[in-house]
Image (tube, one colour):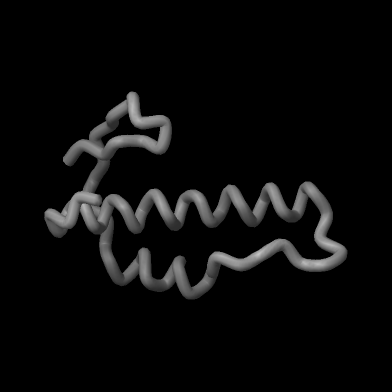
Length: 68
């Protein structure tokens, strides 16, 4: 399966992604607003984790044929 990366130009072949794993990661690493007192480093770290979850969510949608 090919996945279009966020920059819209690159594509790569990825293995099948288990939806249960993505659900687990989505619950473990939820999307949330910056927290008071959070350092820039913490915000960047959390943002990076979340971007991986979102990439995997898109991969699962693509696997199901729901390409949006």
